[in-house]
Amino acid sequence: MSIKKVIILQELFYALTIALVIFVIMELVKPNIVQAYINLNLMLILWLLSGIVLLYAKRN
Image (cartoon, rainbow, N blue to C red; front, side, top):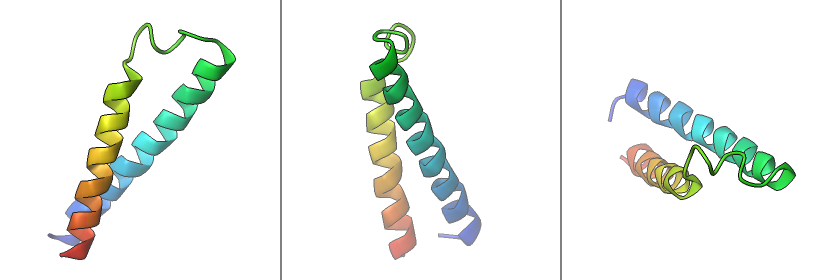
């Protein structure tokens, strides 16, 4: 995989990580403020898939 694609995947993983942390903190502070608009389970699945793809891309 080209270095540009790996960098893009890495940035996507970082952005999803930061978003997930912020959303979880917001949910802890005020329940149902995020869950009313965004399903955090789907966000977690996207985060996990991007991490797996990133690891696979860095390996090759």
